[in-house]
Length: 206
Image 1 (cartoon, rainbow, N blue to C red):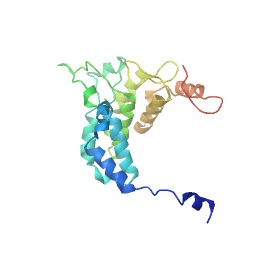
Image 2: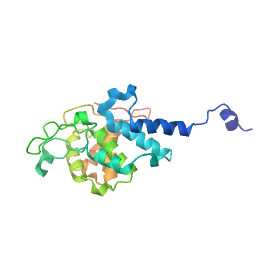
Image 3: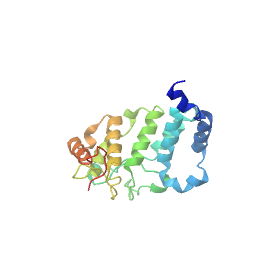
Image 4: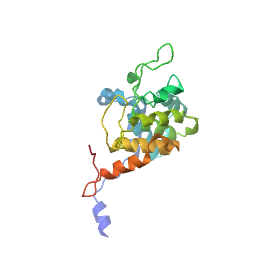
């Protein structure tokens, strides 16, 4: 018996079916400990959908229903000119953060979030939605409003943290939509390099 076999003698075998059942439960209804996370519905949905995909159980979800649900969270500007009004027109994290537009179709409270947008587009990609049908130009054009002078990104146009998490979200969104006009890549690269510590790891810089 080699060393690898000896190390694994006491290892638990992953109970795939149990994980699938848990994720399927989360797909239909949030357990009570997660009810306070309603504001993060899209994020929780991303973990559920991607988990089922990894476990080769994506057939457990109604893909068309998932697509319609996710698309309902996208924020749309009243006019193309609004893309330069300083706001971000991505996806809301949940229905509680999504306010209806006024009688002119203008969003009074736009709470689009960069991480929620990353989760939304990732879900759509996983379930096979054709991303070219998405209003991607609105997303990437307005995403420039979130990039800071140092190259970092804030999560929401009303203010928030700036760190590598949101740089990752922004870069992944650009990659999935095949449109890098949503960021200044050189500024982003310089910010990432400044975040590297002497030990080789990365952390936010201010």
